[in-house]
Image (cartoon, rainbow, N blue to C red; front, side):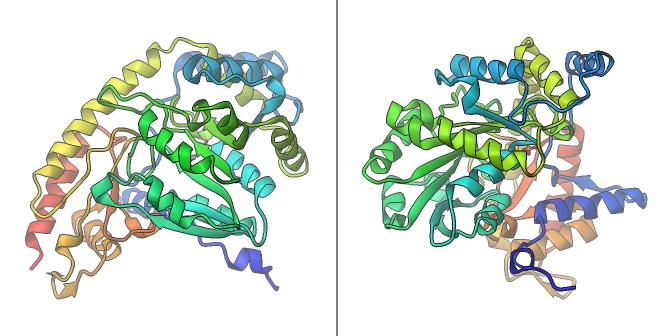
Length: 397
Ligand SMILES: *Cc1c(COP(=O)(O)O)cnc(C)c1O
């Protein structure tokens, strides 16, 4: 059977591939330590589960409005106003089957063939595929480790041309953990306002922020910018709800309407029960989140300390998300049992086979000098895994 070009051009998600390989080894009884996961290890808090059970018994098991139930869109409006000072009306909110789906919908309604989308690298791999699926062309900017992987105003301005339709920003970032401060965003804002393109701001890691940093949404900088930004967020990461599949977008009414129309012909509403659970999540006590963040912060410190202790590795101290993104290129050219290591992909393969540690090579994020380690596992695993990595690197000749 013949496949459409669209399908032929999709690359499978490499982050998920490593994770499933690690899971397969685990299932065979191999003692694998996985730093490959892209989801929290905590269980969904009980009060959220209870709301879902109650929703089932209350018969909330039918179609809902395509863009989500009103109480949920209202809760999202309150959240955006309380946390970011962003005022939206419920009709400007579209709830979808995860933030990934929200991003997909946004990309589909904002860009098309002939358009360019500016994508700072290292990037989350799905952005690249979604740009291509919309028929647009990615314009990748390689941000630099010396700048903490932050896109600079000069780098941005150089990439802008008459075909530029969209800029993707992800702060805190997956995979680098970079957090753009209000000042960083202000300097980008001044460049952006000179031109005419939209911004897709993925803020899914908003709660995962350390060292007293504060999450700032680029949409909050000025009314002009808010009018040109689609804010993406969701409950997957913050509330450990990855399997429930709820994300959302906030945008100007015509954009929100277009996204809802698109969704009305693909998935329709996201799951009714999960939506009810999300109302409970967003209206609930933030204490649960704070407790989880204390634990993430402890793990982050241990992981960064351990990485700093490995010769040859450099690693920026990311302000957010739950990933570390060390540069391992100092080991390229060396050998393990006659096999030469030339990129992070080679190194990740040896680590998984020989040391039984799963990491995600940076090729998945547009730079194979690095690999991504997530610290969504116990402290014991973090220490054991870093021992193994350190031992293996020491054996390279
Ligand atoms: C996890 C993740 C998402 C998507 O989360 P959903 O589970 O689809 O809500 C979006 N963006 C980034 C950068 C992520 O890491």
